[in-house]
Length: 273
Image (cartoon, rainbow, N blue to C red):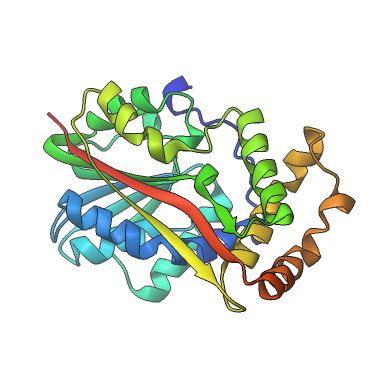
């Protein structure tokens, strides 16, 4: 096994509920991701590799940019995620996308025009080393473009003890699992450590009111992370009561006119030498 691409344990799992959560999460960050890829220069006719493609959302964004004359290869280690990804692209008629169950070191293809990924470097033990290896997968002058988040930026105004408690649990369990929850702000340094000269951009979603996505987004994340939280002794299932968490967050929000600040999303891209 190539340790560069041997991800830390995926703390959120690959249950049906978690895979459905990924699709809902993807909708929140799709516009920003598409914008990053456009700025990076991903264009019609290009051949793109999507690393850690999951249920296929980033691959579909890339396919929309490269068009029918281009192609996208999505790789992931989860058979369950790839099964969903294949069904989704078949329904959408995106024949330029194919998916493979593989780690990157097992992939024989090279000479891609671009390598992309979203919320994937956080799961790799040495992001800079991974980026160096990925740079060898693209042609000279090819693009590497990645999107990550800073969970620590998330907040509520005015402060909510419940919201803060949930965020602290998420960041703590990530760090206990060997991951950096604020990988977004480290993207520039990781690209530089890989010998790349990146451009960066960022965005932060802010919502309020009864129809905010924040309540379900936070509750869904806690539900997927709960087994790891219990394992690390951070919380009990009874204490978290995730089945009522979204309703409790919504009720407090409406009672106190809370505004929710989502994690900061950061995009970085560079050309391979």
